[in-house]
Image (cartoon, rainbow, N blue to C red; front, side):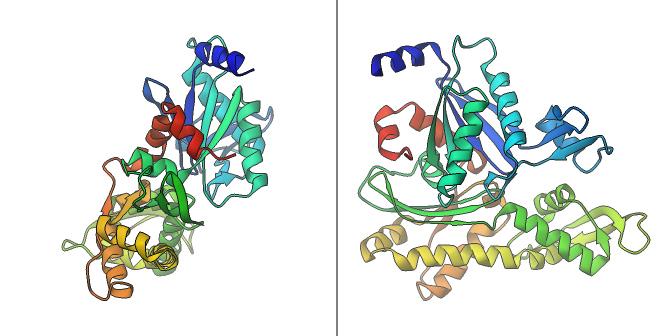
Amino acid sequence: MLFFDKLLGFFSHDLAMDLGTANTLIYAKKQGIVLDEPSVVAIDVRTDQPIAVGHKAKQMYGRTPESIRAIRPMKDGVIADFDVTKKMITYFLDTVNKHRSLLHPRLLVCIPSGITQVEKRAVIDSAKQAGARKVLLIEEPMAAAVGAGLPVEEESGCMVVDIGGGTTEAAIISLSSTTYQESLRIAGDEMDEAIMKFIRYEHQLIIGPYEAENIKIKIGSAIPLKEDLVYPARGKDLVSGIPKAVNVTNSEICSALQEPIKAIVDAIERALNKVSAELAADIFSKGVMLTGGGALLRGLDAYISYELSKRITHGTKLKVYVADNPLQSVVLGSGKVLDNYKLLKKICVS
C-alpha cells in the first residue's frame, strides 16, 4: 500500500493550500505559489453553478442582480457554506492542476488551531469531493512559523501570532510541537466591521466590507500617525439613501480599531502568562513574530510591544516584529513542510 501511494505520488501533483477566510493561496511542490485569489464565489441562482471565482467574483460582491449571489463561503477561518466551498476548491484545483498531472493531487490544507473535529471533517470532505486524492491537515500557526523561518524544531521556544481575515492564531512552539495555542475569532474581518460601525455612527454613512478594507489599508493604523491621513469613504447616506462621500481621518480609524486590536493583545498576554518560565525567557529573548495580512496594519508591532511591556515586563521592552512576507507565510510554510517528509510526519494533524 505504501509503495502504491508513493507511485501515485510520483504521477500526481502535490499541493499545499491556505484556505483562508479572505484569500486562498496554493503552493505547488517544486514550483512555489501558483495561485493567490480572494475566497469569493459568484453563483447563478437559477442553475446553482458558479459564474466567477476569486478576483472576478470579488469585483461583483455587493453589485450583483437578484439572479446572482456573490458569496464568501469561509467565515472565521472555517467553512460556512459547504457546497460553495467545494465549488471554489474545485475551481482552484482545476486551475493549478490542469495539464500537469495524470492523477488527482495530494493536498495539504491549513486549518485554524481551534476548529472542531466536525469542522476538520468538513475541510477534508470538501477537498476530497473537489478532486483531492488524499488530504492532510496542518495548523495555521505552525505553518506560519515554518514559513516565517522560525526554528520550530529546536528545543528553544518561539512565538508566532498569525492575524488573518477570520482568526488570530497565537502559538508558542518548541520541538516541532505547539506547547500553547489560542485561536481567536477576531482578526481582519472584525477590524473592517469596526470601521463600518464607526463610520455609520459618526458620519451616518453606510459602507460595504470592501470599502472598509480599503480604508484600513489606505489610512488605518494601531497608533496615531504623525501625518493625519485622509480618505474619501464612499457609500450611501443613512437617512436619504443617496450616494455620498465623506472624508475620514487616520485618527478616527485608529480609534475605531482599538477594540479588536486590544482583544488580540489580550490573547498574546494570556499565552505568555500560561507558559513555563523557560519558554517565557526564550520568547523574551527572541521576541514575538507577527504574520498574516493583519500584521501589515501600520504601527501594530509597536502597539503590541508597548502594551505587553506595560502589562507583563513592567517597562522592559519586548520585541515584536513582522515577518518578511506576512501575507504568504502560512502557504510558504505549508510548502516547506510538503517538501520535508520528516517534518510533515511530526507536525501533520491527524
